[in-house]
Image (tube, rainbow, N blue to C red; front, side, top):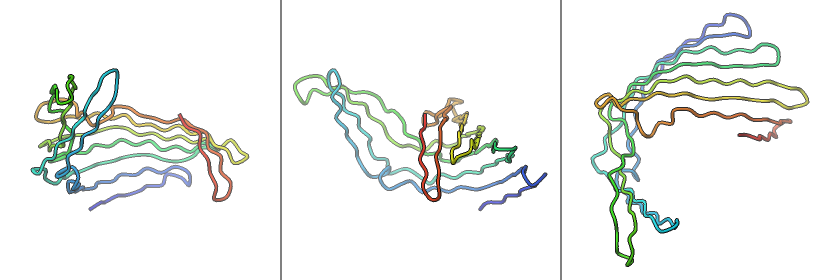
Length: 181
């Protein structure tokens, strides 16, 4: 379930808070399918993902607080969040093997989706959009995340610490087009 509230300071500035619970059943392909990808590089590589029938559902409790609004032609949204997970599903590197089945050595990288008993992800998100007029806007958004496997104290390998986008948007009626970096 999810519970949230919004407080409007003015017509153009509001703050919000929400608490939510999450439940994610392991996707069927992560538990039962075997993947093998042959990659031709200067030599050859095989990337394998092996099934894990022991995956259990992922559960989470999340908290988010933020502020959003606009000043003139600039709109913004800033938020911070924290999520605590039980049985977090993450891909884990099981190691590298050398395979001679083709008459020459091929590196085989083996991975598998596994549950991490207890994990935490926290971060901040931002979004700014400036309307330049003539159906054009400039936008910037991003997210910084920190993660931890609570058993080992290590970062979660499936969490990207920072990502962001800068772009230009053209819109007219129901048509829009973006150029992004």
